[in-house]
Image (tube, rainbow, N blue to C red; front, top):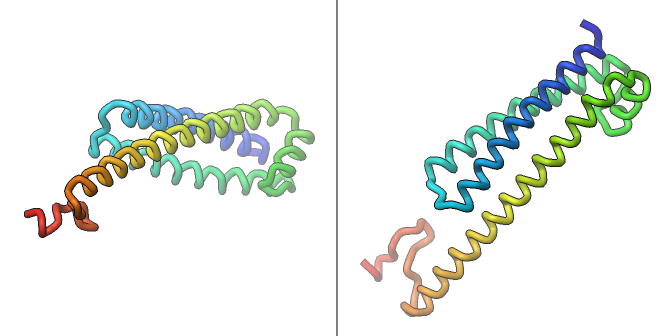
Amino acid sequence: MSHIDALLNCVDEQSRLLNEFIQTLEAEGAQLLESPSNEALGALTARKNDYAKRLAELDQSRAEALAGLGQPDTQAGIQAACADHPELLAAFDSLFEKTEHASQVNQTNGQILETFMAHNQQALDTLRSLMGQDLYDARGRLSKSRK
């Protein structure tokens, strides 16, 4: 298999995995907007971690294929490879588009989580002020003075 074929296969596989990763991120976002369960979020986190691991492995394969073409695994190297081999351009454009979409969805999920955590912290602060002392210890358990 030529370096170009290996690179195309790698980038296509990265795009396929990114589609699945995006679906997982979107499922996570839907869970966060509903009533998230620890089990569901835990399963989604495990899936996200698996995709991240597999995508990192493909990053290494892509770097090796680019090196075989005499290019570094950088934006400039990818642009140079695409200039020398125009058949790579569509695959890389698709990959970059999916990467940007995944980043946007992940950022949105992070904002939802931050809002959720801020709301919970505000509720705890309100309870503490009403009770005059800490309700929970650092482990999230009812403080001994409240038992």
